[in-house]
Length: 429
Ligand SMILES: Cc1cc2nc3c(=O)[nH]c(=O)nc-3n(C[C@H](O)[C@H](O)[C@H](O)COP(=O)(O)O)c2cc1C
Ligand code: SF4
Image (cartoon, rainbow, N blue to C red; front, top):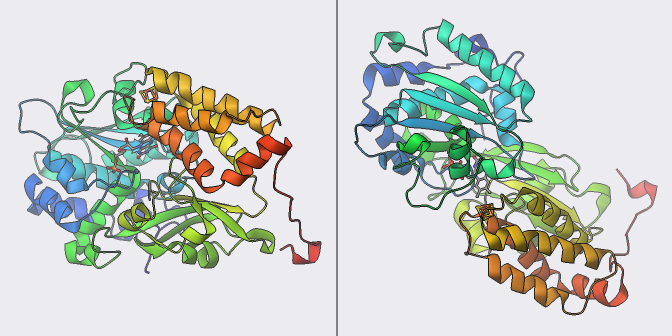
């Protein structure tokens, strides 16, 4: 597939506006301002079938159309908090092509009639924040942002806010609370942010990659966008592949690419000629798949049909040497650290799961521990304010369901079942 979202990343100074404009950058923005009404922009994005790339896959144009026609300010927020373990695609876009994202932001803001947009950027992305601020300045100097943009009568400012290292602030309602200057606590939905978000005004939150698709849809049309990917998951997609592969990285391919093609062709196959054991398909919050379950296509519906989620397309590959109990414990440490503490089942249950998994891996597991873990999962699932509780439960439940014998072995023998299959150096590449 011809590269779309990553077409500029190999070009020197790809983050500069001059490079972006040489390759057709901001033509979509000029076209929108000159020729299109906000409603027309929303309709085109709706018709393109673009689904959000932040995790849930909600149709972007449909979300924009939920903004009520009320006499309140509207806001557009670009979610650049990227913190899901295994996910590192937005970082690439921010670093290599911030203007593509900014063009998506200005077009989306116009579509929902916002005069203020925010980029909520992960605190650790310090260099990317500097590049972003410079890019915004470059836009202003070219008259592409600010008051009466290109004499259209439309005004827009883009403000940048840095997160402070909390995973939960990637969840849209927590993000908006944090943006308001408060502690980043999620809120119960409804009301959805499109109706009542930042400062209780209509707010659209979209992921970096979602917004990056928008200028291409305006430039090339909906039929072109729909010709890439599958019927229900259209367009290009950035897949992040990490773990035990020879060639980890971000790969731009159509929605619906076979998972095996991603792992064995693009990411070079399994390190050290070992066997593949398990794959997390969509970031750490998505249920793990076993080797026999990975003959699937990477689009929203196909991964859901396999019992997991495309999520943020953070694919983590684990080889035959992986101790699945230890891998599960590792993830549980992350979730126990990141619970915001607002709801009891999550605040108490998630650290408790970590403690139990820790004692199992330390050879101190008790016979009832697995049932206890599954019981705790039940007490958390669907009983919390935000989806973080379910996200923390998904790995534990799926690891136990699919690798139960490893858990049982740990408890019975006080050690891991995994005999490390270390091949001779000749086989190592
Ligand atoms: C715990 C949690 C963390 C999340 N982190 C992110 C994130 O880092 N980046 C992101 O774009 N969406 C994240 N999301 C999803 C957002 O809540 C929201 O759905 C998304 O930003 C909407 O954008 P989209 O429609 O373009 O996908 C997270 C959701 C949850 C439940
Ligand atoms: S589920 Fe967890 S992270 Fe979400 S609001 Fe409740 S305590 Fe906070």
